[in-house]
View 1 (cartoon, rainbow, N blue to C red):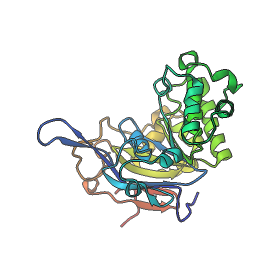
View 2: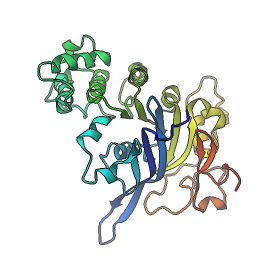
View 3: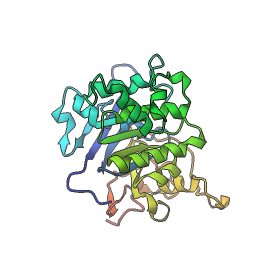
View 4: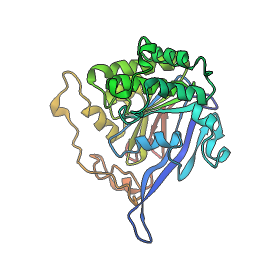
Length: 326
């Protein structure tokens, strides 16, 4: 979907570097390097890639759990780090909420489900002391824990994994956010209930006009739920492509490998692409494509710095071989 002039959320040339090792001159791990994207209200943007690709770091940078080393995050055109240099304000926390991967670790086992939902309602002034329990029960109803009043006094240990994740979603919705950052929200759930949680996120974005940043390694879930897919490798953007066009228009060799690796009925097992194993060099990386050591189409030019090719309204590519001729 084409973006308006000012997207709800825009990330420009985002870079996150972590020091690693000891000594006087520790090395630098480039978790993110030059990542840019935008998402508007009602959109779901999926960020996919293997472990270590930088997916979760994007989510933590957007929610300001990690401060970027370079680049900027804009909320409705306002550079949030310039506007709030000492840290995120309560207003920003309200507008940008995160659903964590682990429903077991993201809820305090000492407190009840009701406590986890009532607390943000009260902190952000969404409910009075008298109406907080009723409003919390309504939110639990909304996320599929019905009747919600029956779950208010239950502790996390008395809930299943799927029920815990629904409590976490209700907690995130309590602030009436504009953006939900969902970091692998179904990866620790049983297969039988993953689709229920994905449908819930889809319903919430339609009913509440939410923007959702879905971080996942599950390409099938990304294609099912999102409008666009951002493919990451080695902390860098490899390709951005509309979800419905992924199989037919993907150009980057890494994107094609992800598509080929996804389970498909009646797939030809002999049609696998000849990829090599390996890991990206995130520590003191060389210029050029981080996928060069594994790429089946690699050439000498791939060691040169990459630029982004705009192949369509929502199709971007960082590849010397398959991008537009220059």
